[in-house]
Image 1 (cartoon, helix red, strand yellow):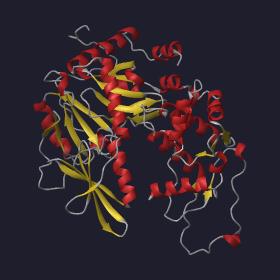
Image 2: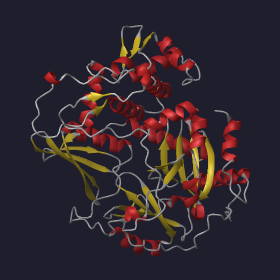
Image 3: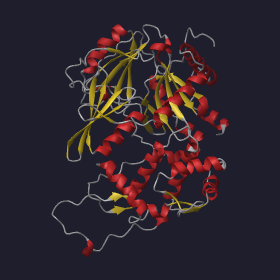
Length: 510
């Protein structure tokens, strides 16, 4: 990472009326102040967050039969329940202790076990219990859970003051709406006596998400939602292969973005009001941190959304005015914190049915023409019903690589190298490169030469990385000394590699 270029990128987004030096100094001072309130140094606080995220990402649910012969698994928040319906259909639900439950859908046992594992590793389920179930628990009451006031709502959970340990002023508590997909909205700040009745009204609003869209980070022309973190200070996170972006909720309505890397290293990026922080473009910064080529590949692998709409939907009535103890500050106001003590977008695959459909690769001309359709005599006779849509072969391969990258845990031996290799494989695949075969040194020299690895990993690190990568069908061990990255097989619909990826794709689409 070129620090001078990064500083130049940051300087281009400086605020009027405050220097970059003063802005970053305020972030550091506030982070140190809040870390002290939590009994930590700022480095230790960031490091502890990374350790907790890693522990969660590598944890595994343990399923046991309960007295009703249902499968149950405990997580930090509550209990997953998996019960059999009929045939191969099962039902998954989650129950918070003394708080209610949420319906997580139906499917095969394998699908629902994987869904529960994913939700747990992401920090969910999110959004709290559903209001209508069960009637025995009063979902409409505020409950003190882990020091935060919470109540269920139709569109999601309402949370007050998750920064309770940070000794915020009585009129600087925070009302959030946490939606069931893991995104969240910052509603208002004020005192509990004002926020609670306001939250009661919002809990009944079926259009809450439209009125209060999730908080997003700007990455170029995209608005990427922050994923909710249930933490006193760290509010949201966006993970990349090289670093995590973390959203901090600071004093008096200000927010900061921190770039967190390994071993508690963190780089402050911006300190703004909530609207301004969403307009701060982290795209050029990520490009400098990841490398411009790796950044483009990451965009293809990341789950991104279209640019956010700034105008409310005309079909909705005006939102209720949020009560607050302080007037809204104009976006052009310089930041001042009095009393501070010194101290890579992938399109969704085409819809599929349970019957494998024809496969086509929408690849570039460097990979040759798409596979020709089978002759008419080999096609099944028409039944009068519409044929299933063709499966996009590129989407099958890229969806697998995206999911595989997201599942590689951070912090264990070889994981950083494995995460750096995946974008290189995506780049090779998209440019029609042939399969790569050789010793581990020859494999990694290829990615060093392309700039996806800074230097050659040690023998121990390389073997650990290959031990992680071999869980993907694309990476194949030929013998004790040689490996193959099966790029050509990914483009051959009849190959065992592509068929394995296709089965995974169809299973995920059901």
